[in-house]
Image (cartoon, rainbow, N blue to C red; front, side):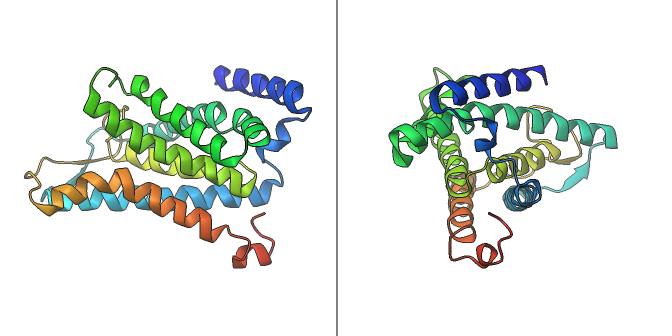
Length: 235
Protein backbone atom coordinates (compact mmCIF):
# COMPACT_ATOMS: atom_id res chain seq x y z
CA UNK A 1 0.00 0.00 0.00
CA UNK A 2 2.99 2.30 0.38
CA UNK A 3 3.12 2.67 -3.39
CA UNK A 4 -0.43 4.05 -3.40
CA UNK A 5 0.51 6.76 -0.90
CA UNK A 6 3.49 7.63 -3.07
CA UNK A 7 1.19 7.90 -6.10
CA UNK A 8 -1.19 10.13 -4.15
CA UNK A 9 1.70 12.39 -3.15
CA UNK A 10 2.94 12.58 -6.73
CA UNK A 11 -0.62 13.25 -7.90
CA UNK A 12 -0.91 16.17 -5.49
CA UNK A 13 2.39 17.60 -6.70
CA UNK A 14 1.35 17.25 -10.34
CA UNK A 15 -2.00 18.92 -9.74
CA UNK A 16 -0.52 21.65 -7.56
CA UNK A 17 2.26 22.70 -9.91
CA UNK A 18 0.47 22.31 -13.25
CA UNK A 19 -3.14 23.23 -12.44
CA UNK A 20 -2.97 24.91 -9.01
CA UNK A 21 -5.55 22.54 -7.58
CA UNK A 22 -5.71 19.57 -5.21
CA UNK A 23 -6.74 15.94 -4.99
CA UNK A 24 -10.44 16.81 -4.87
CA UNK A 25 -10.44 16.84 -8.69
CA UNK A 26 -10.08 13.06 -8.51
CA UNK A 27 -13.72 13.10 -7.50
CA UNK A 28 -13.94 11.42 -4.12
CA UNK A 29 -16.54 13.88 -2.80
CA UNK A 30 -19.42 13.90 -2.11
CA UNK A 31 -18.61 10.51 -0.64
CA UNK A 32 -22.13 9.01 -0.70
CA UNK A 33 -22.68 9.79 -4.38
CA UNK A 34 -19.23 8.58 -5.39
CA UNK A 35 -19.65 5.37 -3.42
CA UNK A 36 -22.91 4.73 -5.26
CA UNK A 37 -21.13 5.24 -8.57
CA UNK A 38 -18.44 2.81 -7.45
CA UNK A 39 -21.02 0.17 -6.53
CA UNK A 40 -22.83 0.53 -9.85
CA UNK A 41 -19.58 0.03 -11.74
CA UNK A 42 -18.47 -2.84 -9.51
CA UNK A 43 -21.63 -4.91 -9.85
CA UNK A 44 -22.09 -4.10 -13.53
CA UNK A 45 -18.58 -5.23 -14.52
CA UNK A 46 -18.67 -8.18 -12.13
CA UNK A 47 -21.93 -9.40 -13.66
CA UNK A 48 -20.50 -9.12 -17.19
CA UNK A 49 -17.38 -11.02 -16.18
CA UNK A 50 -19.46 -13.77 -14.57
CA UNK A 51 -21.73 -14.02 -17.62
CA UNK A 52 -18.81 -14.34 -20.03
CA UNK A 53 -17.08 -16.99 -17.95
CA UNK A 54 -20.29 -18.99 -17.50
CA UNK A 55 -20.87 -18.91 -21.27
CA UNK A 56 -17.28 -19.97 -21.91
CA UNK A 57 -17.51 -22.97 -19.60
CA UNK A 58 -20.99 -23.90 -20.87
CA UNK A 59 -19.74 -23.98 -24.46
CA UNK A 60 -16.84 -26.14 -23.30
CA UNK A 61 -19.32 -28.42 -21.48
CA UNK A 62 -17.25 -27.96 -18.35
CA UNK A 63 -18.61 -27.66 -14.83
CA UNK A 64 -17.65 -25.59 -11.83
CA UNK A 65 -16.23 -26.86 -8.58
CA UNK A 66 -15.31 -25.15 -5.34
CA UNK A 67 -11.55 -25.00 -4.87
CA UNK A 68 -10.76 -27.53 -2.09
CA UNK A 69 -8.61 -25.15 -0.05
CA UNK A 70 -10.83 -22.09 -0.59
CA UNK A 71 -11.42 -20.04 2.55
CA UNK A 72 -12.95 -16.71 3.44
CA UNK A 73 -9.42 -15.48 4.04
CA UNK A 74 -8.39 -16.34 0.47
CA UNK A 75 -11.46 -14.54 -0.91
CA UNK A 76 -10.79 -11.45 1.20
CA UNK A 77 -7.14 -11.47 0.19
CA UNK A 78 -8.22 -11.69 -3.45
CA UNK A 79 -10.37 -8.58 -2.95
CA UNK A 80 -7.53 -6.74 -1.21
CA UNK A 81 -5.03 -7.72 -3.91
CA UNK A 82 -7.43 -6.74 -6.69
CA UNK A 83 -8.29 -3.42 -5.05
CA UNK A 84 -4.63 -2.54 -4.52
CA UNK A 85 -3.65 -3.31 -8.11
CA UNK A 86 -6.72 -1.55 -9.53
CA UNK A 87 -6.20 1.59 -7.46
CA UNK A 88 -2.55 1.69 -8.48
CA UNK A 89 -3.40 1.50 -12.18
CA UNK A 90 -6.25 3.99 -11.88
CA UNK A 91 -4.04 6.54 -10.13
CA UNK A 92 -1.35 6.05 -12.76
CA UNK A 93 -3.51 6.28 -15.86
CA UNK A 94 -6.83 7.87 -14.92
CA UNK A 95 -6.06 10.11 -11.99
CA UNK A 96 -4.18 13.39 -11.84
CA UNK A 97 -2.43 12.80 -15.16
CA UNK A 98 -5.72 12.32 -16.99
CA UNK A 99 -7.14 15.45 -15.36
CA UNK A 100 -4.16 17.52 -16.48
CA UNK A 101 -4.37 16.11 -20.01
CA UNK A 102 -8.10 16.82 -20.21
CA UNK A 103 -7.48 20.40 -19.19
CA UNK A 104 -4.57 20.95 -21.58
CA UNK A 105 -5.13 18.94 -24.78
CA UNK A 106 -8.87 18.20 -24.71
CA UNK A 107 -10.94 15.09 -24.14
CA UNK A 108 -10.36 13.21 -27.41
CA UNK A 109 -6.59 13.36 -27.28
CA UNK A 110 -6.45 12.81 -23.53
CA UNK A 111 -8.65 9.71 -23.60
CA UNK A 112 -6.79 8.28 -26.59
CA UNK A 113 -3.37 8.93 -25.09
CA UNK A 114 -4.17 7.30 -21.76
CA UNK A 115 -5.77 4.32 -23.51
CA UNK A 116 -2.67 3.80 -25.66
CA UNK A 117 -0.41 4.07 -22.63
CA UNK A 118 -2.58 1.57 -20.75
CA UNK A 119 -2.44 -0.91 -23.62
CA UNK A 120 1.34 -0.63 -23.97
CA UNK A 121 1.78 -0.98 -20.21
CA UNK A 122 0.04 -4.36 -20.32
CA UNK A 123 2.51 -5.70 -22.87
CA UNK A 124 4.98 -5.77 -20.00
CA UNK A 125 2.66 -6.54 -17.08
CA UNK A 126 1.27 -9.53 -19.03
CA UNK A 127 4.71 -10.55 -20.27
CA UNK A 128 3.73 -10.67 -23.95
CA UNK A 129 6.26 -8.20 -25.34
CA UNK A 130 7.91 -9.76 -28.38
CA UNK A 131 4.88 -11.88 -29.36
CA UNK A 132 3.16 -9.80 -32.09
CA UNK A 133 -0.23 -11.55 -32.03
CA UNK A 134 -0.47 -11.54 -28.24
CA UNK A 135 0.67 -7.91 -28.17
CA UNK A 136 -2.12 -6.96 -30.60
CA UNK A 137 -4.81 -8.75 -28.59
CA UNK A 138 -3.61 -7.33 -25.28
CA UNK A 139 -3.27 -3.83 -26.71
CA UNK A 140 -6.78 -3.83 -28.19
CA UNK A 141 -8.52 -5.41 -25.20
CA UNK A 142 -6.81 -3.42 -22.44
CA UNK A 143 -6.64 -0.26 -24.53
CA UNK A 144 -10.38 -0.30 -25.17
CA UNK A 145 -11.16 -0.89 -21.51
CA UNK A 146 -8.68 1.81 -20.52
CA UNK A 147 -10.47 4.22 -22.83
CA UNK A 148 -13.87 3.37 -21.33
CA UNK A 149 -12.61 3.79 -17.77
CA UNK A 150 -11.04 7.13 -18.72
CA UNK A 151 -14.32 8.09 -20.39
CA UNK A 152 -16.14 7.33 -17.13
CA UNK A 153 -13.91 9.88 -15.38
CA UNK A 154 -14.62 12.40 -18.13
CA UNK A 155 -18.39 11.86 -17.83
CA UNK A 156 -18.64 11.88 -14.03
CA UNK A 157 -15.63 14.02 -12.99
CA UNK A 158 -14.69 11.21 -10.63
CA UNK A 159 -12.51 8.11 -10.52
CA UNK A 160 -15.19 6.23 -8.57
CA UNK A 161 -17.09 4.68 -11.47
CA UNK A 162 -13.92 3.65 -13.31
CA UNK A 163 -12.48 2.06 -10.18
CA UNK A 164 -15.74 0.16 -9.67
CA UNK A 165 -15.78 -1.11 -13.26
CA UNK A 166 -12.12 -2.10 -13.12
CA UNK A 167 -12.37 -3.77 -9.71
CA UNK A 168 -15.61 -5.59 -10.51
CA UNK A 169 -14.02 -7.28 -13.50
CA UNK A 170 -10.70 -8.09 -11.83
CA UNK A 171 -12.17 -9.37 -8.57
CA UNK A 172 -14.70 -11.71 -10.19
CA UNK A 173 -12.04 -12.90 -12.64
CA UNK A 174 -9.80 -13.77 -9.70
CA UNK A 175 -12.65 -15.44 -7.78
CA UNK A 176 -13.16 -17.76 -10.74
CA UNK A 177 -9.47 -18.73 -10.54
CA UNK A 178 -8.65 -17.11 -13.87
CA UNK A 179 -6.25 -14.45 -12.64
CA UNK A 180 -2.65 -14.35 -11.41
CA UNK A 181 -3.61 -15.47 -7.89
CA UNK A 182 -4.40 -18.98 -9.12
CA UNK A 183 -7.12 -21.02 -7.42
CA UNK A 184 -9.22 -18.75 -5.19
CA UNK A 185 -12.85 -19.89 -4.89
CA UNK A 186 -14.44 -21.49 -7.97
CA UNK A 187 -12.66 -23.35 -10.72
CA UNK A 188 -13.94 -24.85 -13.96
CA UNK A 189 -12.82 -28.35 -14.79
CA UNK A 190 -11.50 -29.02 -18.27
CA UNK A 191 -14.15 -29.48 -20.95
CA UNK A 192 -14.23 -29.97 -24.70
CA UNK A 193 -12.76 -27.60 -27.25
CA UNK A 194 -15.09 -24.89 -28.55
CA UNK A 195 -15.64 -25.17 -32.31
CA UNK A 196 -17.38 -23.22 -35.04
CA UNK A 197 -18.98 -19.84 -34.53
CA UNK A 198 -18.98 -20.29 -30.77
CA UNK A 199 -15.18 -20.21 -30.78
CA UNK A 200 -15.21 -16.82 -32.54
CA UNK A 201 -17.87 -15.45 -30.20
CA UNK A 202 -15.97 -16.79 -27.20
CA UNK A 203 -12.81 -15.10 -28.44
CA UNK A 204 -14.43 -11.72 -29.14
CA UNK A 205 -16.68 -11.41 -26.10
CA UNK A 206 -14.05 -10.29 -23.58
CA UNK A 207 -12.24 -8.16 -26.18
CA UNK A 208 -15.17 -6.24 -27.68
CA UNK A 209 -18.38 -6.97 -25.79
CA UNK A 210 -17.08 -5.88 -22.38
CA UNK A 211 -15.87 -2.41 -23.45
CA UNK A 212 -18.95 -1.89 -25.64
CA UNK A 213 -21.40 -2.71 -22.84
CA UNK A 214 -19.40 -0.65 -20.36
CA UNK A 215 -19.31 2.30 -22.75
CA UNK A 216 -23.06 2.03 -23.30
CA UNK A 217 -23.68 2.00 -19.57
CA UNK A 218 -21.48 5.03 -18.91
CA UNK A 219 -22.76 7.01 -21.89
CA UNK A 220 -26.48 6.51 -21.38
CA UNK A 221 -26.88 5.71 -17.70
CA UNK A 222 -24.79 8.71 -16.74
CA UNK A 223 -26.07 11.05 -19.44
CA UNK A 224 -27.47 14.46 -18.56
CA UNK A 225 -30.94 13.20 -19.45
CA UNK A 226 -30.76 10.13 -17.21
CA UNK A 227 -33.31 9.85 -14.43
CA UNK A 228 -30.51 9.57 -11.89
CA UNK A 229 -29.32 13.05 -12.78
CA UNK A 230 -32.76 14.55 -12.41
CA UNK A 231 -32.91 12.99 -8.95
CA UNK A 232 -29.41 14.38 -8.20
CA UNK A 233 -28.21 11.01 -6.97
CA UNK A 234 -25.08 10.41 -8.96
CA UNK A 235 -23.49 13.71 -9.72
